[in-house]
Image (cartoon, rainbow, N blue to C red; front, side, top):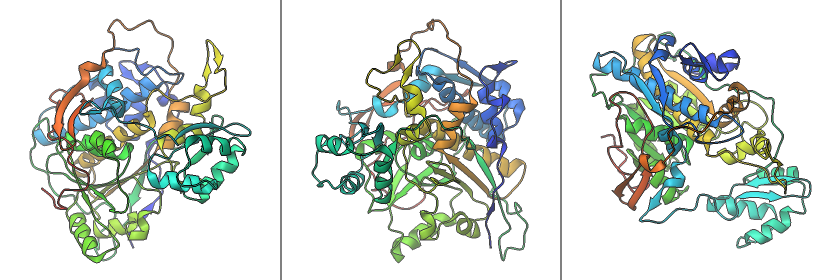
Length: 492
């Protein structure tokens, strides 16, 4: 039987390499993330940063995390471009203004002049009998489950929710929500737990093939344009919300044929897809029906990459565990994403960026203002962006791009990578040294420089431009988002 063995890659620990600052001309967080991805260290000299520095202000080094994740993704794209063009690896120049704008892309989005609502009325921080809790109820089914778990009617408003939450202890709310399949997390102090930034798992030998691990070669790649280094790569996108879709949106930017596949029973918000659907196509397949399952298996048979963003074990119920995927495709690149990490008591729980911020202690940390003291009403704080989502998205894309090169230059065979929002969060908390105070940037930050307008099936979109920065990189996506779930389930 095929399977995986749990060896952790270079990101399994955080040490001196994770500190902020530079070693010579190399930015330390960038060196740490690049090593975690298995990148050749000599390429780090190709990376430089420019642009405004007073962006993404926070008590934590969010600016460094953001620019680092974009830098390693840009460097991985440049490495693949060099492999496919035969030219030297192009220089990487990451603009911090472009990064800051992209990291809040969902806030810059407008649809025919309308600004979407980022969080629904039942989502947010709420006082409890002994502290604070944060809920996530943006999707209708999550709102229904939350209200039901608290004994409220399906049409109960935020005021009724606040009244009930105010009478209960935060952890009791958290556990009642979990048991009901809803989402609520008690605000916790900073956790000392360190999750790996990236996990590299070995793909074992495949029964019946008669080869050892890593001996199944990936299909050859021909030449590709400098601005489309992933051209011809087929990506099955089994992700939702922000982190996974940001990863696949980035792969699509670089030329990959990305097909997002969703269940028709799990509708997506149009505004969310309008932000993260650039460059890719989207279809709906019910894997529980034989006809749709056959279509999915045909897609999988010639896919190069699968990116998943469901809870650990959720896809195994459909026969899509890593072991099962590698049994069919031992040369596959599989990148998995979860919220809370791949081990521990919370590994199987649902989660979103905002909730992971709460559970690992970021919300408690950000409630303190060193100059003014704690918020007067004790309200927890937030990062200036959904930085765990966006940062993890660029790390995933970087991991996929690096795997495509690694398969063809170092060792053939499948690649299995695992990422988590908790891993990115613990890196932010414990792996990147806080920045020293600096004077105002000589270059003011104006996000309009990195915004564009595009006509789409949803209407006229104002959107953030991609921040990927290497010499010759694409400036925008090749196509706007189409209507969610309306594309044919075929490869181009």
